[in-house]
Length: 103
Image 1 (cartoon, one colour):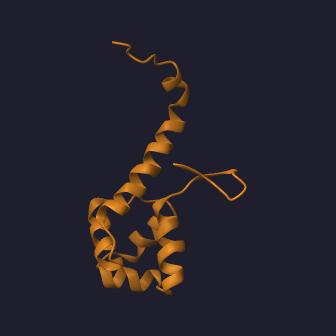
Image 2 (tube, helix red, strand yellow):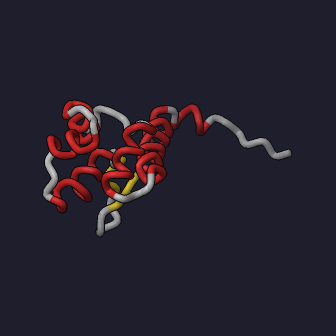
């Protein structure tokens, strides 16, 4: 999903890792090491998610949901929104050539 800033300017597609970092880890003063250790995930895995280099899987979503008292659907929803926007941009020209069925 493309987001807009306060001035209504597009700021791009936001990876779930950015949400994890800015909305959870930083405000709660939780390190990558601590999150990894307390959720039984590797530090590399968590770091790659934060850097936008790795997707949030169902396994990760379940662990993040349990740890942060959110829902797995929240994390999977963020990932799905990100993936859909990435793919939409990638095949934008192809999608424009498809005419809707009017039946």
